[in-house]
Amino acid sequence: MALGRNGMVCTSQALASSAGLAMLRAGGNAFDAAIAAVAVQGVVEPYNTGVGGDCLMLAWSAAEQKLLALNGTGRAPRRATQDEYARRGVAALPAQGILTVTVPGAVDAWCMILERCGTRPLGDVLAAAIAYAEDGFPVTEVVSLEWGLSAQAGFLGNDAARACFAPGGEPPKLGQVVRFPDLARALRVIADGGRDAFYRGAIATRIAALSAEHDGLLAPDDLASHASTWVEPIATDYRGYRLYELPPSTQGIVALLALNVLECFDVAGLAPLSPEMLHLRIEAMKLAFADRARFVCDPEHAPIPIDALLDKGYARRRAALLSRERALPAASAGEPLSSETVYLTVADRDGNVVSLINSLFGPFGSGLVVPGTGIALQNRGRGFVLDPAHPNCIAPGKRPFHTLIPAMLCDADGPRVSFGVMGGDVQAQGHLQVVSNLVDHGMNVQEALDQPRFHYLGGAAVALEAAFPEAVRGRLAALGHDLQGPLAAILRGGFGGGQGIMIDPATGAYWGGSDRRKDGSAIGY
Image 1 (cartoon, rainbow, N blue to C red):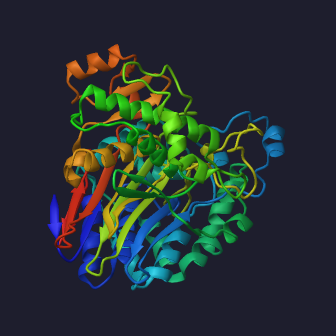
Image 2: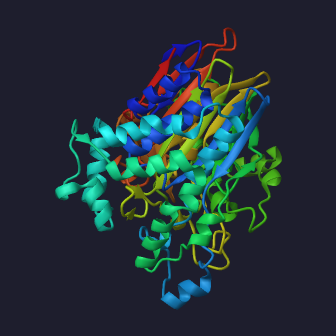
Image 3: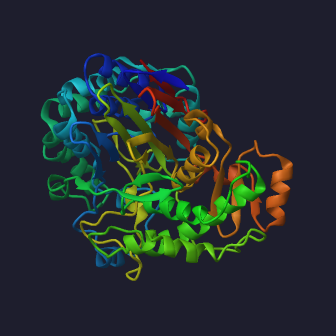
């Protein structure tokens, strides 16, 4: 772990962590530092995140003495009707392309966060990202691998994307210095003009022109009318702690449902990597994913019985379906989803604690870069379906189902752990495993993040990281789990990559952890 008394920044890329720390040292608060860091990540991890994506935040505001939750995700275009897709002969949303593009919510979310909670102007906050885009940065190890695999898999969908992210037909190699002059200019426009420069100005015009060129549905009015939403976080108690998550349209409720089921079992004395413990965690996730497939959607378009789902009596009834001796054959979890996402967490000397996620969804999002801007547009529309009976059926102005879930674990005195695990379907599974590691097994934040993970894939299939012993694998197989190798999880988010900050209840010091699965770092001071 990294430890510090005055502040802590944990991200999946060391340059982003350094940018956040520099903002704290310059007198900015945790909100300023979080946006500075995530803006840098949009430059140095461009296949994962950027201003063309979405943002969600869960944060403890020291000034307001309350937990804040912001849904900064975009909505479907106004022309995105079922009739329109039927007219085009589209039976299912594609994985990439212009029809998967929803309004990018990140810039509006950043501006709303800074307006309510920040202390520095947007130009100061974006300065580090602009500098890296303009002057260049060396590509790091994991980023080099994932960037290369994504480019080689054909995720760069237009000439602007290929010119930006694979010039000369080759993605950058480890250590290569990369510059994004178009993105630097776009970031300067945003720094000078704020949200209106993105949603109503020249950038919006370019986004709408790209949509028209590809026969898309996104129009200037969709961008101009966008606004993020302050929402109430949802929570459940787990063995004396309270876990807070974002409400639907995200899958935060899935982690809460799984923990409610796991709490029904006495796990005292079980080792964290024992087959008995893993079996219970996997089975709890199966049931939670079944509920996700049935209920989670945009609550502005369909009712979701959140209180009933989180009721402990409901959890006991669900837990009664499980056996310690045999795996459930299946519990429908819907289509598995991958995600290219960054998660970060920041804390400052005043007690502000930020848990934040920013994402393009798939590798390079829609695969389309807005010419002249270096901005890759997300493909969050893939979270919709075209079945009118399904709660996630596409509709004008509707938010798609989202996998993004920043989290906060609290006790009676306030925040104790700010954390998140990125990676599509593995996010809720990562939350279950990290919280259980912390609460059930007394681990610190670095230990909890570094433990080997499973990734439930659907049906009876489960992928395990290579670190699990053969004896554990054999016992899980005997219980009826269909075990898969690590490669089976790669295109579905892998095994995630997390960051976390623990707050020492005795001293108030920050303990920072950064997942070994990423290029990141935890830096305190």
